[in-house]
Length: 107
Length: 142
Image 1 (spheres, rainbow over the protein chains, first blue to last red):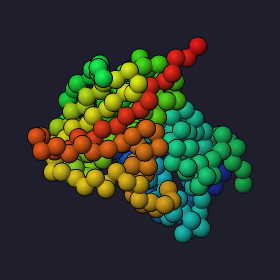
Image 2 (spheres, rainbow over the protein chains, first blue to last red):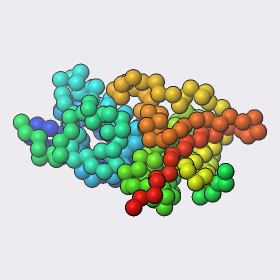
Image 3 (cartoon, chains in turn brown, cyan):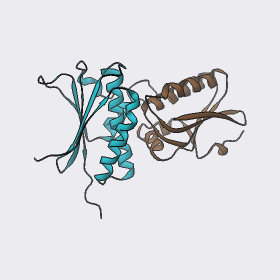
């Protein structure tokens, strides 16, 4: 798993690549919390993500709750394949705002 | 009923092993003619069960043993996950959270959602826990 950050409009974009599981979800959590603590809304880019487990999803739920409390947003972009299935199985697809691609998000 | 053993293998309770466990489960489930979506879901459920063993049975201790047996009885594929940790409560595989936004329980929710049965087999003969998960085999697809 690797991740990096970029900017899109006033959003910080967290690009996740590969597999997120118990072995690395704490790194994703730290990065996500750093972004939110700086007062930035975040887009989590799933387009290169091939696997995510419940520890990864719990990290995103925690991030969403923090974002909401701070008047920020957390959006998921580009989810497909197994990660999209996880969103559906957990019914978190009804909780998160999900868009097809980062570029779909406007001002 | 006659069972057919498909896998019997040990891993450690190190989170870095999860990727290899998923790889092995993907190969087995693909050979059983599950669809790609079904394979993804089953592999996820096994991964969640192993994650729970690591976190809650072994309490993040990395040198515990996780032994996985996979077999079929002609109707179901049976996954038995053995650990050597202290016996855990059977209640820990019950879905607790009523909302996915509540902390905890996502992994158990996934296991219950994907598998046709999930249960602990507690025996006095062996130490630790045996979590047994069964999934109905796909019917013959044209």
